[in-house]
Structure formats: structure tokens, C-alpha cells
Image 1: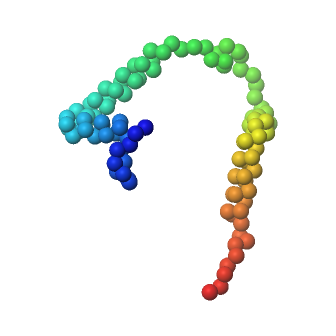
Image 2 (image 1 turned 90 degrees about the vertical axis):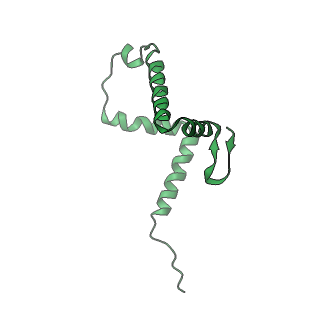
Image 3 (image 1 turned 45 degrees about the horizontal axis):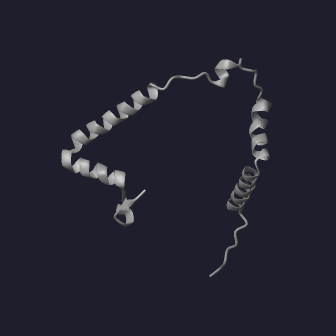
Length: 106
């Protein structure tokens, strides 16, 4: 996406267009246009036909606490990248909470 300006005042092309519309038509009409675009988006989403999901097709099975606890761990264990992130994140959290900080006297 192309940006206009520099530093904290950088605007994307969409933001720049919105700013121009805001200046040209005023805040009330700008917010009205924004509201209409939300309504159009809502109508478009509602017009999509609903499809049957897996829970609607198959009967729900009984879940146990142990199964709910183990299932995410199996998912993490089956993906090497997730395992690495879990180990790295856990190591970082353990080091960040450590009270073994070195204090250098002045």
C-alpha cells in the first residue's frame, strides 16, 4: 500500500482519500457515508447463504476435562514451529521473572 507523507503523519492512500472527503463535505456527511458503507457491508455479509457446519451435521460428542486439556497440547506437539515457540516463550518468561539479577554497585 502506498503511503503519503513522512513520520507519524503518514497516511495510506485510503486514509488520504478519507481525509479529503472529510474536509470537502464536513464531518456530519463523512460519518453518514461511513455508516452507509457499514450497512452495505452488513447487508452483503447477511446475503451470503448459510452452510451446514460440522456441529450441525454430526451429533455432539461428550467432552471431558482431560480431553479438553490434552487436545491443544497434542496440536502443539504435532507442529515443530509451535513447539519451538512454546519452548522459546517459556524460557523467556522464566528468565524475565527470575530474581537472579546481577546488581553492579557504583
